[in-house]
Length: 258
Length: 108
Image (tube, rainbow over all chains, first blue to last red):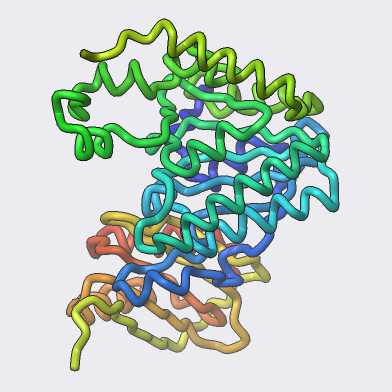
């Protein structure tokens, strides 16, 4: 039976993505490692600060898995949320799992934690690149209703493999942000067709920003994650130059506004 | 001075008689608009201890009624229930509390 990835919570996705009952969580909710900032602003905390991290088996391979909870503050990255991700990635350098799988769903930095969140995102990016440099593939899955935006959009593009569904979206600035800063003539955030043909999963896959487009189905994400294991894509000067050439070619074919 | 932006905390204690079999902490729900998370953990006492943190201030009487109804349905002993709330309605709170208990194995 098809189970919608988009409609699952972070914990449900992990339970269904990994081999049955194989997930072992680090810093679980009972540890109550929550944001030091939110209560001061009158915002309730979440016992896991909106991110679940741990180790699991994926098709018999030991992997590190993590999942952001889009239902809590849009998956926003705060100080603790970011620190959990960084510690999890650094532990991967020591334990060398077969892969690191991040189920990203985030609007980006949690504005309540502004600079702490920005620093956290930069640390996550650094940690992702360190894991890649160690030859461990980092696989990012995007299929939640909140998409993957802001700093987490940057983190996603630092990964070896990016898997997205048509429901998923990936970008730096979200539609409302672009409209607010450049005006509705530049980008109408209520134009759903426009939103989906710029940030939507199919558009991203066809323009080469994602490696795989899968159905909105947890089993499809699981199969894609398994396929991506043991396929590290080292970050080399040659791969960077190829990326720059791809971006230059895309820019050359982009019609510019007068 | 009351701080209108602060979280309201509440605590309720009940005597119970149904001790769940040994269990790992159960978490249900997600804190978000109109929803809440509930965690139930084993505790070394014979009571049902309920702690609530909520962003919606001034509803203590309603929380007291909802939690009392919950306890009358389950009579749990030796558990700590913790709630992080972001404006859930009483019906949603009741459903989530029952969902959490459904995740426990309670001896008859």
